[in-house]
Amino acid sequence: MKTFIKVIEIWIPDKDRTQLEFSSGLYGALTDFKSASKQQHFAYDEGLPGKAWAAGHPIVLTKFEHSFFKRTKAAQKVGLTCGIALPIFSGDFLLAVVVFLCGDDKEHAGAIEVWCNNPDKKDLLHVMDGYYGTLQYFESISRLTNTPKGQGIPGIVWQTGMPALMEDIGKLDDFTRSNDAQQAGITTGLGIPVGNSDDHIYVLTFLSAKATPIAKRIQLWIPDQQEKLLVCQQGYSKNSNNLAEIFETLTVEKGVGALGRTWLTGMPVITGNLEDSVYNPELDNLSSMLAIPVIRHGRLKAIVTFLF
Image (tube, rainbow, N blue to C red; front, side):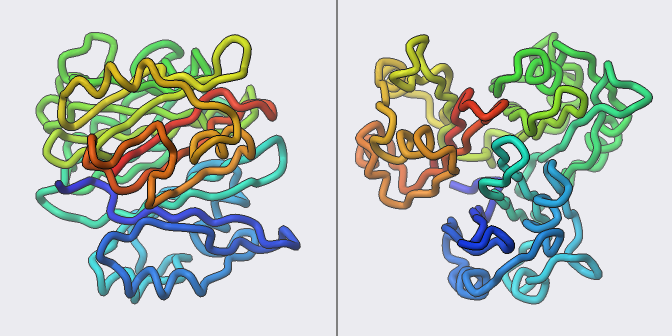
């Protein structure tokens, strides 16, 4: 199955916390690009990960040529043309940067957007930047859209401070671009809050089509009321089956498995083995997972998992 995102990387501060070094990644068959990437280091404000660190919010780079991207030749060789960097902070201190790399492909329909407010219209969110691939009309509509708190995926994330997952968004009244999404073939949307500031709001959204989903499965996990267990609040699967009901009954202890480590450390995790007992590759045909923590004022609010 084709997925919208082709490469995922995690970059973390080195022991001196002055540069970012390679931690882990998902590259599929792009082994040469993986080899080139593992040797890289990024200083503060250098390269795509370093720029996201310095900016304090997600960065979208739609063209690698004549940009600050440091691996342009290696990326071009394997058809990668766009990058999105998501910094993860606890207070003022960077924990990690998650990088998503995509490639322009007529068969891949989807978008990744960064929404924010501005000093003139603090009560509205607009698209600060985004990658839309071949969806040029949807991009033009999106860049003209202003979303208030509580409306659309960005507005709901802003209102709740929590990630939001929506299916069949082309048919939803509370998705402000539903008609345009339906025309573009977009069916699923995911929004993730970014940052600690109450004044500067940032929301990262992923929009994908059924033919080229973001991942085979997406899930939102939250701590229970006693903050002793993680529970699956919501999930999306490319293949509808009864596994969704099974996941809803499972829980994860802090420190146990990949999800439990993310809760314990606040660090994003990529695993190719899915050793966490929550996931059974034989049942779900899954081979790898990305877990992204959502941290607010130094506390873990949720974990978003992408399963491939």
